[in-house]
Length: 344
Image 1 (cartoon, rainbow, N blue to C red):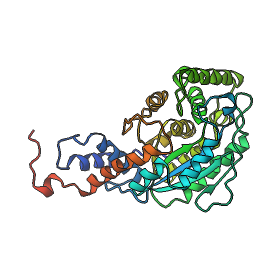
Image 2: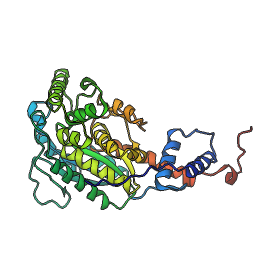
Image 3: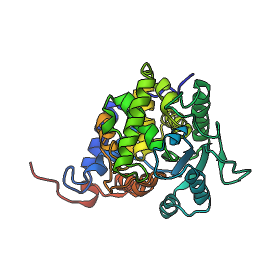
Image 4: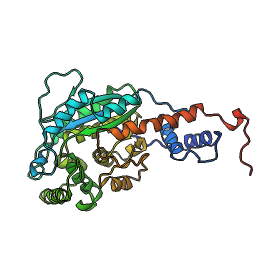
């Protein structure tokens, strides 16, 4: 498969110009904290000292997982399609937060085990009615994995704005994400497994055992695409493709929680420079997410103990991105405001 070619964003001259632009604003050096690094990141992505956000959007990918047959979730698989209906009815948290922040929301059926029929407000990219049970066989064929990734790429090509957030819905997908995390980072399975949608302690231990057995069953898997096709979901594979395409287009990638970050782990193995385009919205309450972020050297904007998914962290973080580009373009400089700078 041909992957989008992603170039590092760092440019020495531009980085220096951005630092000077940020430091010349009417504030003590570094006093806007992480907003300054966000502004610099966006400036490097957009190759300008006057970055702007246009038509932000969030893609929410939904898919079902055969691994739920191993009783790894506190909720039945039917919740996936029911929540997709909730998204379409504008009733979920992501609908509320996206609407609040003027963000266009796209709901994608990547592989839900349900026939939605013809729906004008649902992007039908269904690869299959859910993945296979990776405790017994690979979750998908390599052909299905490639199809899912290509769908993700095509969806991003159709976007008009320059910032995109990623969200997901899929009962069982924290199990898939934990398996991917283990295979990519080398962390022990126990450090990758959390409560997901609300599993009790016994359920978490059971999920851990299921993953450990599955990893042993697929012991030879090591290539990133093999990891994705063996343990992933159609929604995760579609996000990988979408992320790669978004970075090639020099878009700002707004990363949500545990499952979305598992997709990024794969994308970063395929194209390491993708990390230059990522802003991490929050650190999830899901057990492995903090370790994922540490592995990627990422600093999240928010710590709200979220573990909802859906891209909710992206929508909540979006005003901070807007604040970062706004101070770059609207805040006075020491010269323009005739404010004295710090004495040497």
